Length: 368
Image: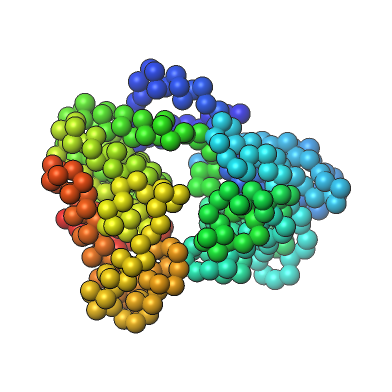
């Protein structure tokens, strides 16, 4: 299995950390496996022959090959290999069946073991399959390599409903199975300890190069937004912290960094505003009371106030703010998050907090 290339913004690693990372095997996301299964099913429908392996593209442009199995119903199966990541979907049999299209475009459906979205706030259509945007694009691209005709593709995962019990799907309103996820197509195995060590090291490398400003981003899209917002900074200044904002802040103080800019989306910013510096979803929920207070304090329209109580995610609240054209609560959350971060480090850092939308394209709030 090929290793994913190091991204340009990632700092050089010490020999010891590089050795530890080389010892961990990367894996494939459910989205990548779904795209491979869909392509295999489409090839069988188009040619009448069942392939034993297929090649699909990743968002990076890399091409990868997967073995294909066929179940008793003649559906294509690709078995997920999560590498050395402790993933509850490791070994999942991503299964795809293809039928002629019923409309102008290809339709993706959730079968047994694949979740269906039942609540707003996830950026996915209510009533539709829990397939996030990047895997959807990968699946459609893989199908387009086989047939220009619209298709209906039904995905299923045997035992997927049980697997989903180990996730937060039910709490978020995704019912019936697992989600089809992924932003790069590749699972990079990181234990909590190793991810924390990676965050610490990235701050250390920036400091060692004399950088006085560090930009913390929570994931790939917020990182891309951060790089666009600060084009003059050296790539080493950008640190992908995941959920370890508190760890990064304290390390910046220790290493003599003068300024931190945090760039994230509504959920992470809301948790920081509540003083939660370890923002993993298993460890902390969004404080909907805080969202409601922000809405009321800024004189928000009734729809925005109601949205604070309507869902378990900050995303829905954010989307309603956007729909109403009223971003003042989001700005207030940024200001509260900035104050909480400064309090966390006893005022030892200058802090800015930037909230971006869920595509990482639009700035929704900026506390300086």
